[in-house]
Image (tube, rainbow, N blue to C red; front, side, top):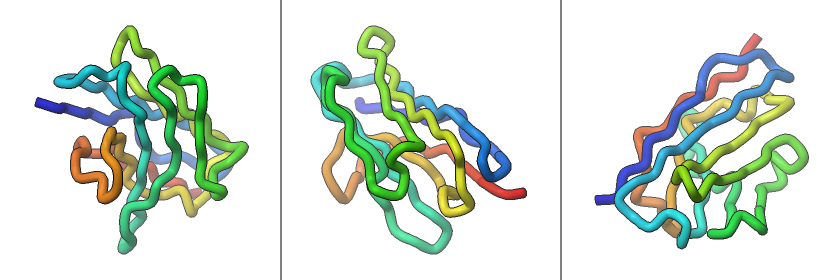
Length: 116
């Protein structure tokens, strides 16, 4: 059974940093392209970043390029999202997934709130 558990969210001031983690189990993590998506209040799911199975290639939505870094540890089955220079528009629940849209298989998510 696929299980994904996100953690690391919290309340941070604009310009601050957070690192999110996603612990994966129930599937062969190292074989999958992994994705972070987010859902802001009152909005749908937004793709944020993706990483290939080996971690050699990464992709970002324009809104986070230069500020967020996705990475993975295939020995520990953990996906990360390092977030710097956070903005109020980054406020959302963040999820990790191995799925294509509509990203049905997700964990409970972790809340990131950027506010002064």
